Image: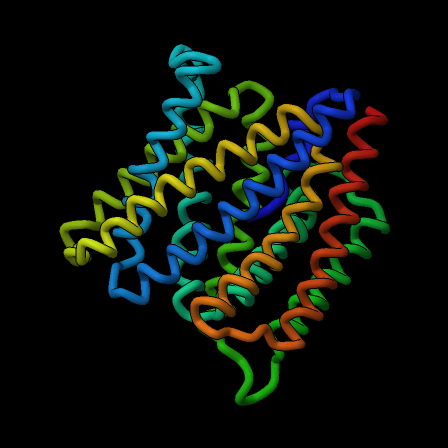
Amino acid sequence: MTPAPVSEQPAVSHRPQVLAGVMLRVVAVVFMAGLAALVKWCGAKGVPVLEIIFFRNAFAFVPICLYIWRTCGFGVLRTRRPLGHLARSAVGLTGMTCGFTALQHLPLTEATAFSFAAPLFMTALSVPILREPVGRHRWGAVLLGFVGVLVMIRPEPGHMNLTGAGFALAAAVAAAFAMITVREMGRTEPGAAIAFYFTLSGCVLGLAGLPFHWVTPAPSTLGLLILMGLVGGIGQLLLTESLRVAPVGLVAPFDYTQLLWASLIGLLIWGELPRPATIAGALIVAASGVYIVLHETRRFRST
């Protein structure tokens, strides 16, 4: 999970709303850590990634549709940019596929830490794609963040998990592309519509893969797959709501608390102890990401 684009920042000045936004963000991060744990658990039970993606999106429709019904109404789904939604869904689902695969090859804490690299890739990609100027301070933060990634990877013989690290980094790059497309589409498309069509595309992708990779889950695993979809949908909505009531510069840094929850869940369920290199690298990447978020927030306010 990564910070949302700065362009979605609302104008908020009331302290109770800011505190509510922070609390929503913290709870959302707990849900997203739980989602990652459920994905890893179901994968360990032999459920294929595309099947996991299907359940993740199919049951996420329940909270998402309830949210649209209670807030903006289903008229918000009218769009003149179907190709834009298709492009956003393509990069987003690529990231989801790679991220879910990485969870099957890496400890939960390590897979979570690699996801923190997405804002760094987004900053670097915003130059050629969005033609945005990136000053020396942000480039410095990006380079420092990539040093943190190298620390986590530990490029030493016998210590590298090339498969897991490769999928995790691919997921971060795809997430960066997704954030860029959301930033661009957010100028004309409501956030609820973007979330709806992305979830719909996830269902279609999962359905397309079911005839080739279907594994009938045990009743207990089926219950966890359904719970996974609900948790993912609720977490997604909580992330959106946090940005509706509080500035992104205040709430986005709390995304990095997901590492704490992932470490706790990994320890309690799988007995995973985070490697010192993972913690050190994650702290470097998180510091770089927080700096970029705060810098972009100040830049947004000045424009």
